[in-house]
Structures are given as structure tokens and as C-alpha cells.
Image (cartoon, rainbow, N blue to C red; front, side):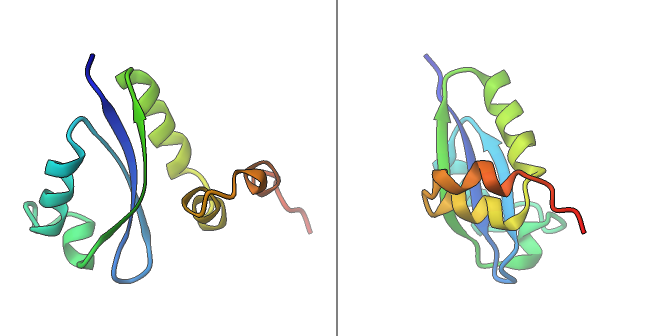
Length: 96
């Protein structure tokens, strides 16, 4: 069974990049070696892996990547920190 990864990188400018791959080691190398010089991470090197999760279904992995990309920085940071108890509250919209 094939394994897929959803991952979060922290870039040098402190932004968080979310991606999906079927080979985490290769993909990290591509990010770190600027394989595509016009890519988001190539212009923000160095990058550091902060989080990854494994999936056996590519459709589930892609859906999770898209979901996490829509999250606020605070919610992504809670995921990175393993503060799963905060995720639900961070999902709530704040109205003024």
C-alpha cells in the first residue's frame, strides 16, 4: 500500500507552506535545493519541516492538504505543536 504525506514547512520569513507528496524525503530535498527557482519556497530558503501526517488514500491526503491550507496561522501552529485541543476553538469565526 502506498503512503502519502501532508506536510508543513516553515520558511525563512516565518510563513508556513502546506503540501502533499508520496515521497517526503525526495520532496523536502526538492524544496531545500530550489528545484523550481520560481516556487514559493525557493524564494524563502531555508525551509524546515515542522509537521507531517501519513495517509494511505491520496484523495484523503489532498482533501486534508486543502483543508489545512485554509486554516489560520494560529490553527496551523496548534497542529504543529500537537495542541489538538485548541483546533476546534481556533476554527470558530470571530465577529466584532
